[in-house]
Length: 194
Image 1 (tube, rainbow, N blue to C red):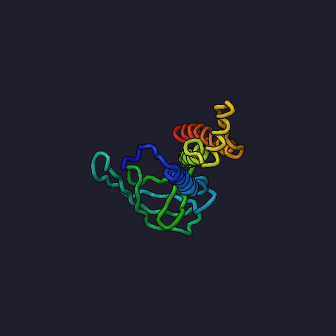
Image 2 (cartoon, rainbow, N blue to C red; image 1 turned 90 degrees about the horizontal axis):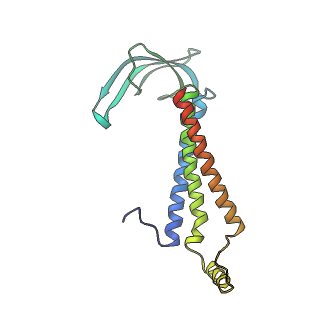
Image 3 (tube, one colour; image 1 turned 90 degrees about the vertical axis):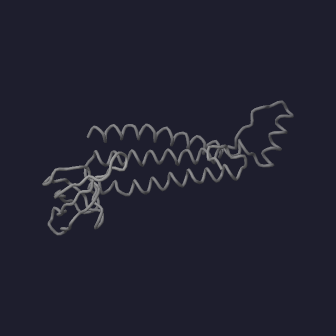
């Protein structure tokens, strides 16, 4: 089955709408959960001292692994760190926020802005899922909607008005999509410039 084909049934449209909506919500919660750590509102702030970095692989599978030690600012948490970082020279000290025993988040507005742009990008998927739900009845009307359209057509009207609730959902979906795209672009610029 080719995924780019347009579903022909109402169930197919609803299934795709659910998938897009769920993917957007998962993205919002996954990316959004690290924003408080990057802004310093949650976790333990501290310094990560890089001891060594090694690069493995080539091309797209190239990856840099660094080892180092993390010490919290108040000195209560000290542990060894092994993770995926950019290549840093030995002895480089980086500000990090400890989320859990093995997760250290970068700190600052730049990192938070990039994460917020990912959250807003996920909101675009949420808006697209809502839009797909709102457009299902246009593409695949129920028996009642078909009868209503037929009676309107018999009276010479060719435009089929959407129910008010459906119009509101459609309008809200477009507002979410537009605001998220503008916000993601602004946050991406802030994150890259910071």
